[in-house]
Length: 103
Image 1 (tube, helix red, strand yellow):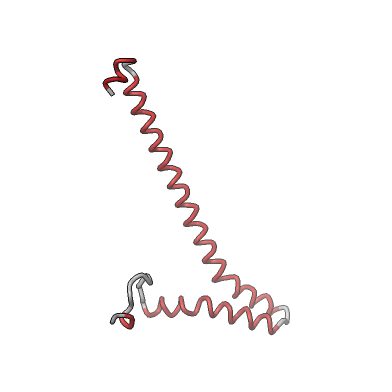
Image 2: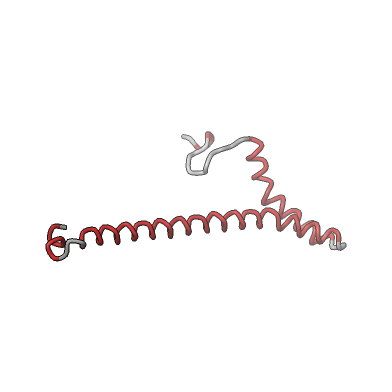
């Protein structure tokens, strides 16, 4: 920085200011990407959970019994394990071996 100060006394301060702006911009970009990813995961999760049940209701009320049953089974296949996991209180993330997996 001393060499920059010899050229112009304001260079070190300007370089520091540019560096601070770069870091702030990068942090904002990462935060924005993180928020968008969180929203996309939430929307996708709700879609996969609600869509089969909504389709089952629509098909059922319109008299399409077989598609309604298929959609209901798909909904149960998607939400059933999640409901059981929530009721049992299983908090494992899947990264750690469960009790049955330990040797």
